[in-house]
Length: 421
Image (cartoon, rainbow, N blue to C red; front, side, top):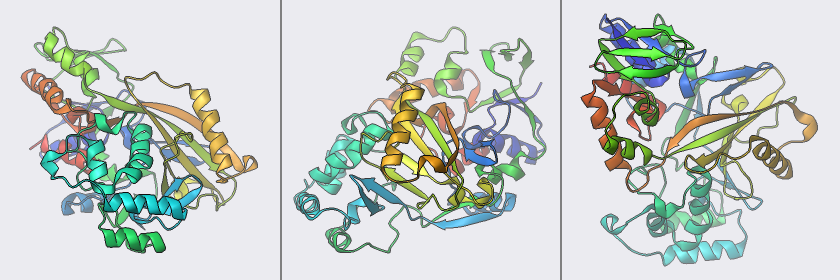
């Protein structure tokens, strides 16, 4: 028998690689026809698009070096933008207000000065955290709106531990300076975003993937922990000695027999977002003006838009450029119509003047069931119930959806490494 790994995303590839470093054989079973998971990509008429948008900014030197040794990397300064009611603001918007009308800036700055003063232990939810950091007007018109677009819920429905260093909290001097002029300083949580020069984002895993035994088109339907046996949709079976899974927690729980009702209930309470990717290729080299940008207007479906061609010219044919928009919703909400989302998105992006209809040579929309974890107020309790049960069944969980955590790619990679120590 053998070590079996479920899923060939960053975590699964990492687990297989680190086992191989210890001369331990493993087999990875992947439901798709190719490897990479959400770090993977697809190509249409020479235009390459990642499955959701990624950069690497690994903070641990050994992981950063491992990625860099897998493929040459472009280094992009972490300069992004925001779109709000026709104005373009440098990111982060909270201290780059100069492009806004005077009246709007006055409201934002006045509320910033008069924002509530509370210690972190007094803050009960994300909505309150935002108002304490930025004041009522900015919180309600910017991150409240973005939360509905990105997370699919109200800010008050989220807890705050996930925020970490992801959002900059400016002082009054930064807010005032940014109201008069565009600030040149980068206030993002990392100063540089790295991206492979060739092959799309998954190329950071080239070294890890080399020589691994990956079996494709192997959708798991049933796992018997007592017999240590896995059944696949093609009716084939395999046995295992050790099982490592990057599958989303709700998926793997549904594959197990005789799960206690308490675990089933906890699993039902785990919430996540799903998302559409609208991928556009253009017959001109200069359509994309921003490496990535956020959109706060709630009548414009995408929460954010990136440019694969600016990430790397290798992602498009010569003389072309590309954009990729992401539209999210909460898993407990109805799935929006693909046709309606595409039509609304294209109409709004044309209104924004990002491109003209005649420029488009590739247009694609596809869905990913799992996009991000929703950090509601019960997440930690419910997640622990599920993870404890999987541990009791001899199943080790890794990766963003296996850990049910807000993991960046290098953190997912690290979780695969830790599983093999």
